[in-house]
Length: 90
Image (tube, rainbow, N blue to C red; front, top):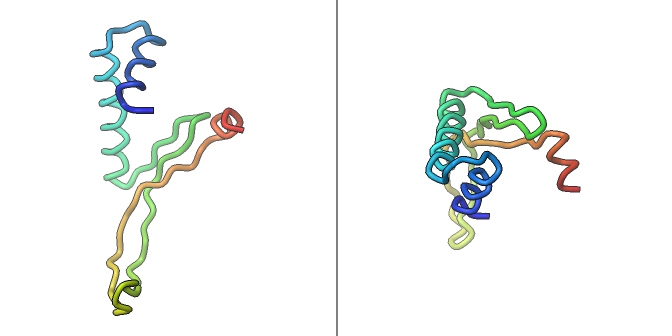
């Protein structure tokens, strides 16, 4: 599903114009992104929880050259689906 298709579904189900649905989707994504950038988690009951995972620095090998490289520590978003979402997919 593309963003455009999702906007169309939101507009249809909420009975609002597509422009309004797109603004709502952008606000949702922005809100989740802002919360995660601050290190907070976002829980949507029944859907799931967005969190930030901290990955420690580590050594790895370049598969092409075999050279050992240092991979810096990073933070990345994680998503854990809720029970209702899991049940809907099964």
